[in-house]
Every structure is written in C-alpha cells, then in structure tokens.
Length: 494
Image (cartoon, rainbow, N blue to C red; front, top):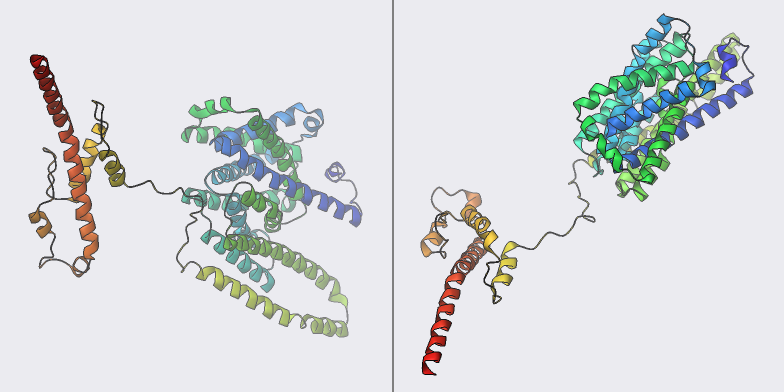
C-alpha cells in the first residue's frame, strides 16, 4: 500500500485513502497506549529507564536488519537525504524516548498523559513559522484552554509525581513537538528520498549510539546486573516492549504523512482513557474525583482540539471551492455562519467556568491521601515506661543501647542536662527558668501552659527512668551480696 505511493504510482481512490488513514491512526494509537503501559510495568521491576530504552532501540535495529522484507525495503536516495534526516531527527527521537521513560519512573502514567495534552500549544506556535498558511480560530483556543484547565485540576490532586518527573515531562513535551515538526517538514513539506524503514534504522541506530554516554553519565552501566535478576514475567514484558517499539516506530512515521504535527500529538492522547483507567485501578495512581475529572477534561479538550482543527481545514477547503459561486450563495453561507455564534458563547462560558474552578483549587489547602499511610509508631516514653515497670531477672541490660539516644533527647529538650553525668530529676530552678521574661515574645507568652507542663512531666519521667536503669546493676550487686552473706550465715548456724 505504501510502496505504490513511494514508487510514484497514481493516487488511490478517496475511499482507499480514508481506509489507509484510519488504519495508520488506529495502529499508532494502539501501539502508543500499549507502549506506555508495558514500559511502566517494566520500570516497576528495575529502575533503569535509559538502559531499557537503549535495549528497545537496539532490538528495533536488529529486527530491521534481520527480517528480509524490511531489510530489502531500506532505501536511501542520496547521502545528502540520509544526512539531513540523521543529523536532526534521531537526536530528538532519543531525547523524546528517554525523557518519557525517566518521567514514567518518577511520575504516574496519568500525569504524563494529561501533561501531553498541552503539546499543541508549542506545536501551533512552531508550525506558524513552518507553514505560513496555518490558521487558528476561536474553537482551537477554547479547546486548548479547556485542556489546560483539566491539566491544572489533575496536577493539583496528583500525589504520585515528583518534581523530577514533572521536569522530564516538560522535556518530553518540547522534544516531542520538535521531533514531529522536523519529521513533518522532511516528509511532507520538503520530502527526502528515504524509505520508512530507512528512517526507522536511522532513528534507532543513531539514537541508541547517542544514548550510551547518557547512560554512563547516569550511572546505569554499573547497574546492568539488575537485569540478571529478572523473572520470566519481567523478561516477557521487556520483549513485548521491544516488539511494541518496532511497531510504534513504523506507525509514527507512517501516520505523519496524513496529519499535521499538532493533530498527531492530539491523536496520541485521545486513546489514553484506557491508560489512565489502568493506572487508577491496577497501579493505584491518583483516584480522587478531582484527579479523574481533570484527566477527563484534559483528554476531552484534546479531542475537541482535534475536531476543531479538522473542521477548520475542511472549511478552508470548501471556501476555496466556493470562490466561483455567485453573490446569493455567499449571503446564504454568511447567514448559516452566523447561526452557531450562540453555541460558541455557551462553549466559552463553560470553558472559563471550568478554568476558574481548576485554578481556584490551588488556593485551597492540599489534601494528603492518608489511606495508605501506616500509623505512626508509639512514643518512646510509653515504650520505655512499660519496659521499666517490669521486673528484670537477667543479668544483662536490655536498655543499654538506648543510653546515648536518651541523653541526646534530654539535651535537646532541657538546657540543664549534662552529657558527662546521668541526668538528674527536674529541679524547681529549671521550672522557674521556663517562666516568661521581659524579652519573651507575645507568641511565646501566650503559649498554653498545659503544653509546658506536659513537656516537663515527660522530661521528669524520662530522667527518672534513666536513673532507674543506671542504678539497676548496683542494686543487683547489692542484692547478690546480701544473698551471699545470708547463705554464709546459714552455713555457720548449721
């Protein structure tokens, strides 16, 4: 199907072109969703994102060179065409894959999916410089604002992502935009004579070589021994990720022929509802209703953006075709065009309401998900008290390892503790020193007295316990001496 187009054969019928477009989009969306889920499962077994990415790219090169049909399809028209592709696209391709893997290792799948819905914003700005005929209407702007509100709402309630993950998600966002723009320029706008298999070979071969110094810089070469501890299930997941990497590389280049860069980025995200559901119900990611609502809003905004772009492209084509019509036809078209203005007003009102709701959530106090947080350990005071009240019959000191820690605690609480001697009971002078002086601030003066009494009571208890622990060996020795003397007296009497 693609060989006819590359060989210069006459174009196919509109029905076959639509079928080819649907096949390309569906194949890429399925490969993209499966790739993210499998990569997340692989990274849960070992934290080697760059090494796994290098293995996947090397596997793609091996498949291209070993399968006869793919090897025969590799074609480079000229050295200049191969150089134009190889000096720009493979580097961006490698950065995009590595940043995605590292972001998955430090963030949730839902966060990465939701964040990618903001990719059309820099993509549109960059495409304006490449394609001068590109237009942006009100529907496109409202769709992007709607997607942004969903991203803000999800990010506010995501508890599984770190700042490192957010940083690499932003890096992945810009790398994906640049990579798709350069690909579209070299495939559609200024086409080069390189087959799709040749593009895949350059992307993965050159990209894998560029990842080796990055892998050494992150210290993953010395950790490759973790792969030896993989189970059969983990090796199966790694193999599936490699096979899916081959499919996504081919489908990504194939679908670029039919859509623009910004529309391509939206297509990669509209199928992520299943990915987010998998992360919520299987991996236990953000499941608060605000996070779920934010992800739905963000993905709906992405789908709305794709629909707005397709409608805008279709209207531009029909406007060019209707240039030869008479004046009456123009009046009818203008009358029909004035009809959906009320719908747009309602759309704008809904978008700004959702945007206000999502941004206002940042002003509220952030709720911490305590459902999976273990209960705090009991206080050291209670543990020592229960242990000290029991009678010891053994000769060893079970609390000897706690002496140094206890002295440090007393020194941190009281200014009268001395590390060179055992702490003594709390004196009246130390209690009087805690009274407010002339230099005491208002906050310290208004501090509840109950808290101070509780602190001093706790300190006295700790000091008395320490004294009991220190005097216990002496008491045991004295008791042993008394028992020995009593035994001697009993023998003398006999």
